[in-house]
Image (cartoon, rainbow, N blue to C red):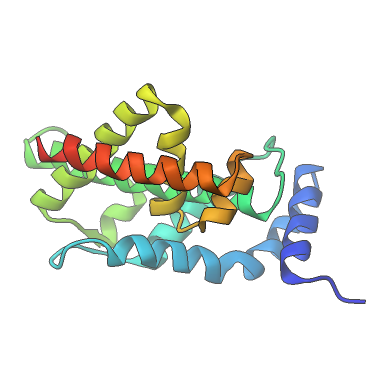
Length: 188
């Protein structure tokens, strides 16, 4: 009897959590397309003139995920939530690096530098969004996580509710509040 893809991912995550490193090699082909979709979804929401290779973002996220040896993976949704967070941090670090370089500071070498080009305006927007999201998280951590999971991670309302262990109506309320709050914050 064959496992569904979701159950197979969860099984491999549990094996990886238990120290079976080769489970990561089996896992990646199963989750790669979803990671690609997440990265592409984020990149599609960017303005024209901003280019960042989706593949480079996925590979950087993979390296961050592979480094998390002591992580106890709950399930597939938890894995993708952590992947979304990793992608967000990579994009923000890259934008900050670009701002530092623009101001004449020392160039920080990161592996995305060779494959990504980001406009000055876009770098400022990414950093501003990250700062606004941090402010929202300071105000209400769960609302910040909802944005991170839905916007950066591309998770559905149901998957977000599963990761946060809340109801779907709660996620919808948090999502509406957070979008309004962030829009106000970014407009000022």
